[in-house]
Length: 242
Length: 309
Image (cartoon, rainbow over all chains, first blue to last red; front, side, top):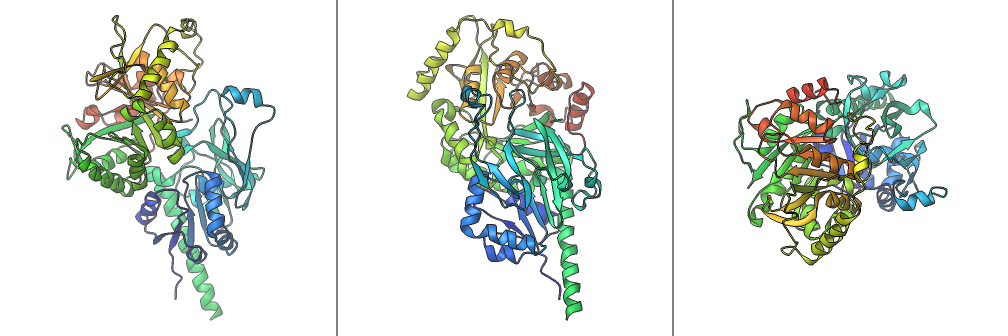
């Protein structure tokens, strides 16, 4: 008996997830969009898509029991992919609203920035903060390149992706972390921020693979393969135990 | 480096592509999704569907189209045209549209931009502006055709325009890197003025286009889709002064539209117009240029573009 290889796309009621669902289906994955914590716990793989704001998403996930279910699944070794906000939520905290530095109010408040922090899932150390620039346009919208770190060149999620490949981004916030070991690729806009993070069974990308044409599908295919491999490993472990 | 985007625009009526389309290898050249998917394969960075459906009865067709696009397209897409309220925009976003573009309704009720940005996030809200250069006779419209809110706006802009014209100096300010282009130097209007038009260029509003773009950005728009009504359909190139004035005035990306006829025009839009993205319809639909040709030309002019497709 093999494991059910279904990847659950976590629905936290903030937007349409059909692009993610369809992208995974296009690379041959079995996909289920669900908001049910039990389905999340039982998934072979999890995808946390990126819609809405850090505070809204965390608040819904906590109330609904999704946050605990996700932590439980991650601790049990279930492959997890966070996309955009889904990556950001993996970190310890996110700044909900900082005043835009280009506004007049911000200039007077720059000594005491008004930052309200929202607690994230806390899987990775670090925080999510706004990209602030007076020169560059924010949000960061469009296609930008990934710059692999040393570890990135051997990252399973990036297999078949060229260093310098273009992906589609649309975000105003990005993560900062002191743990360089989890950073597989960086992107430079306003500041250098982690574009791909990975550690054990947990992966995240700041860009949208489901909106990044053929290159993006490579990422989704890689993740589907990671899930499949994990299923085979678990199935054979079960056989050994039996 | 953030690349400059090349965006084909598809006019859609009752769920079908209008205007002649000459695209090789399509089973159904009238199907917007199939055409958009072909543009994806040939390197388009995004697509815009402009809904020109005349009756609201057929609006469901467009929502259906947005749903199919969410499933079948692997690049972001915008749906524009005919939105009157957040409810209509919400239906499109719920169907899967990455962005919705709003034009007349935002002029009549600027607060709509804020409501939409609050509901869907700024990144999903594009404000489309149709602008015409103001001739010696001055602004054509007085806002009398518009709602009360718009008239209030118009008055504010009139004050704005009467401000001392000390901004010309800034036009000569050194330009650190026009190709990178993602900078804005605050107000820059110079002697040029453009007026916002509605209804496809038929209704003048009396509103200054640059001031309106600033207002839209302030209210939460994530992008400006800027069309020169003087250039649209002429193949004479973008109105570069207009594009540059708006691009410098707002802290959000500007998509230049209207007038592309040659490869040089695309590059000019970015280098001289300082646009973040360039949009065209007929040169792509008629097969005059492929997206790759356009991007390779832009790259040859030093513009960062996505070519790994």
